[in-house]
Length: 72
Image 1 (tube, rainbow, N blue to C red):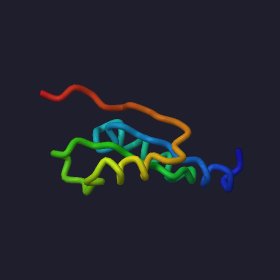
Image 2: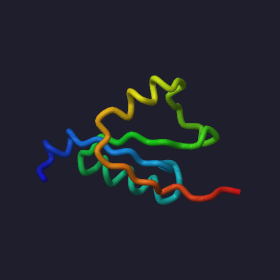
Image 3: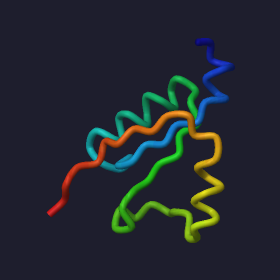
Image 4: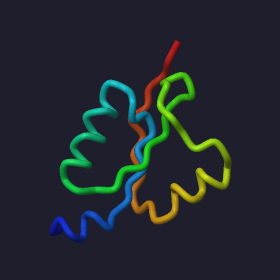
C-alpha cells in the first residue's frame, strides 16, 4: 500500500492515551494514516461533545483497534 492510499485510510483507536495506545497512534500517524481516537473523559484530551460530532468523526473509519485496559 503506498502512502497516498494510506492517507485516505481512517482508523479508530480506543485507548489512545494509554501506555500502548500512544505508541500505536504515533506509528499509524508516522505511516500516514488518519487516526481518530477514543479516550476516557478523565484523560484531559479535548473531545467531541455531542453524539452528532462523534458520528461525524467516525465517518470513513475502515479499521478499529482497542488497546484500552481496565482501570481501577
